[in-house]
Image (cartoon, rainbow, N blue to C red; front, side, top):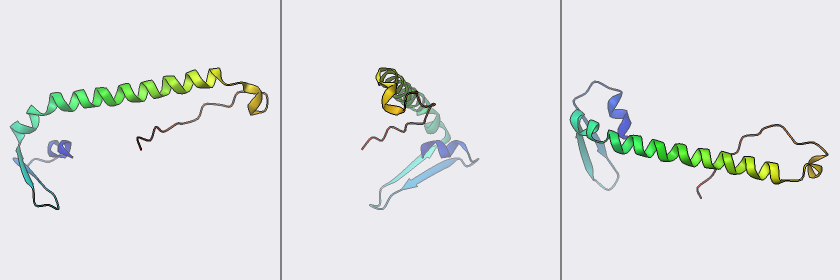
Length: 82
């Protein structure tokens, strides 16, 4: 949500929630959060990469005879955190 502040030309971005907490971010404050944003994106990339690697590992480990004698084509796996 904080990244949405980069998409408009306003000087401030205000976030409010149901409990009444209000946070006001200026353009400078948003830029101060960039290192945290990039680090979070890097960690997300590592999670996706490790999930793909584990899927490939277990696909090679699985006996292809269980799937009708041939290994199926690539499929998409979505890691669900809950």
